[in-house]
Length: 230
Image (cartoon, rainbow, N blue to C red; front, side):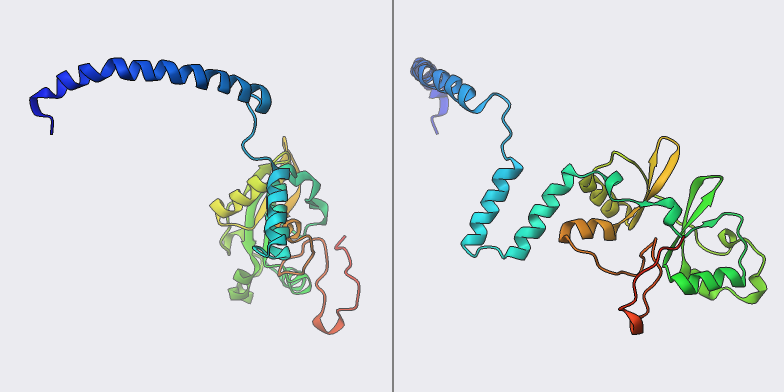
């Protein structure tokens, strides 16, 4: 719009801009020092406690429900929880070995415990897991053959014992799985499932299709206490 006079106009305005910067510097610099001393140089923008108080205010104003507040706070607290405190010890987990053959005894165990996901162990290492529904399609002619050769073996999600629960939730989402094997160095400590995460979020226990470490409860006898496998 200014055409050939652009350079002349810019040169004319420069002294005024420099003067304005100098004036604002005298105001902004002392103010920044005061804020650094009051708030700190590396203060966190949001703290968990502040967010919780904000959510409580929203609850008081009926913006969110108490149940929603409980879930939101529980999810935020997952970052301070470690999986090692919520695992099921592996000695209580029903599993098979990689050289275990398909037989009537295995079918009987699967009918008793009714787990949908079965871990596979090979030389004290996790080989993976398979879904018990794949056993249904096998016939008596498959008796004596290794189970791992007859079913699809899914790769395991192996995590460290110092993994945080929130990180595990993101891993479950990325890997599209619901069970993880917890190890410390070369030692297999146990397993943790998506159900265990939900228990922490909802602060409640519920019975799902897999409850390793316990015997299935019959729907007709729910009053009976659950017993450990071993």
